[in-house]
Amino acid sequence: MRPLSELRPGDCARLTRVGGERGFCRRLMEMGFLPGTQVRLVRAVGIGDLIEIEVRGAHISLRRSEAQALFLERPR
Image 1 (cartoon, helix red, strand yellow):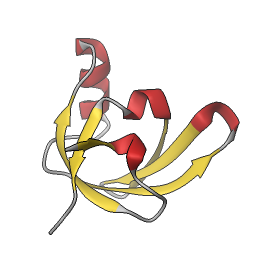
Image 2: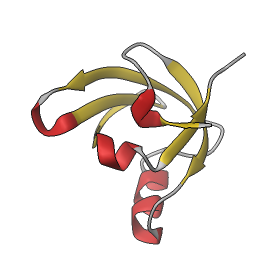
Image 3: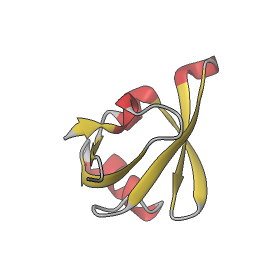
């Protein structure tokens, strides 16, 4: 497993675990970040250290520090 923040633009992976504080974890899960979900890193933005992620057809921006709480495994 590795954190979502280590993906490169265009990479896809399957979400295995959502970590972090309870409220933060719950909010991510409400946005569609559920274990077993396929995610794709769309792009990394230099301003504010943001990354854009595609999950369940939606594009969501997170800080890299927030993405450290999402753990992935690469498809085989």
